Structure formats: structure tokens, C-alpha cells
Length: 294
Image (cartoon, rainbow, N blue to C red):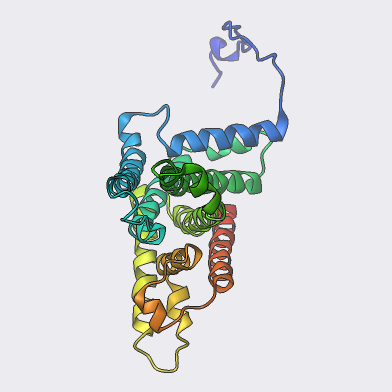
């Protein structure tokens, strides 16, 4: 059977008029920077539909409004109502975890669902670069979310004081705990959220997995308290939310009655535990990403 004459005709290349890119090529460094900026914008819903902005706007509003309320109460009472950072942080940690659990899958699961990984890795970017840049964007976003209300409290407390200059001098050492706690909270929560988002390509599943992991850790820590022979510090360190709450009380020197009865471990123990937990989650996430990234 002979082929039709038309099928044997030579193929033709048509110039459709697309303009070639003739600008500078930044290489791997520019690719990493562009991916980080795009990820950070996506986490806050910038340049995306209104639905993508719901969680960031909700978390920022619910964390900043109580801070404004505390400052208003302190100003109205002329300093009689103290501003307690540890109490404020205790009520906000769940919101920070919600932000990470909801937004981290927007990057990692979204890239897999939309089949963007082969496109991203055809450029000057390795698997390790992709994993690190995506995690760095999630960590940076969580640092900003956790730091915003604390900085508002810090600056506002100085602004409502009768003598702002003297208050600023007396609060000079408080900026360290503010930065340290926001950084550690973001480190742990970003690690858990990133790990959950690498285990599944479904965003809802990744969000539920992050929240579920925190709930399981809290339940296990509460159960260990009832067992004899368990070191008293272990339940305190196993639950990251509980550890961050206790660390806030220690950093800002605002101990609770329970801490006075049963003193918790020192600050370096909490810092080492949180750093190790975040590093372990990040290591597992990087290992998982190497499996799913082509």
C-alpha cells in the first residue's frame, strides 16, 4: 500500500511572528530570586483572586485587632492595665499555624497539580534549589505574620507611654524576645506545613494533615503527663504549640502560677527542642520532595 503524495511532502516551519527574548539572562540566582518572590506573593494572595486573599487577610485582621485593643485599653487606663506579650502570643499561635497549614499547600501542592515542576526544573534550578526556595518563602511569610502583631505591641506600648523616650530606653531589650519568638514559631510551623504539603498533592489533605499533626502531638503530650516515670519536661517539649507558649512566658518574664509551682526547663532547652523539631521536619520534607520532583 502506497502512502498518499500529500503525506510525503516535506514539513514546513512557519514564522508566526513571536519575538525572541534578547534581554539579560540571570542564571540560577535570578531564577531562585524570582521563584521566592512569586512564592511570597502567592502566600499573601497578591495578584491573585479574592478567594486566595481570604486566609491571609483573616489571620492578619484577627491577630492585629486584639493588639490594637490591648493598646487602647492600656492607653485608656494610663498604664494601669499592663500589656502582656506572653498572654497575647498564647492566643495567636493557633492562627499562625492555620496560616501555614492553609497557605503552604498553595505553593507545593499547586505546583504539582498544575504540572509546573518540569517547567521550573528545565531552567537553571536544581531539586534542592526548588525545595529550599519554596520553604524559605513559607518561613518568611510566617515570620512576617508572627512578627506584625508583636511589633505593633512593641511600638504601640512606647507610643502610649507618658514618657516615650524613657519607655523606649527601658524596653530596649524586649525587641530581642520579639524577634526570637517570631523566628522560632515560624521555623517550627513552616517545617510542619512544608512536610505535610510534600506528602500529598491535595491541598485540603495537606491542610488537614498539618492541623492533625499538631492535635496529635498535643494529645500525646497531655497523655504523657499522666504516666509515671516520664520526665516532666518531655510533655512540655513534645507539643510545639505548648512549648512556644511556655517559651514566650520565659522570654518576656511573664510566668504563670503553674510555672511557679513546677518550674519549666530553661530557655536554651526550649530553643534547642524547637530548632531540632523544625530541622527534622525540613529534612523529611526535602527528602520527600526529591521523590516527587522529576
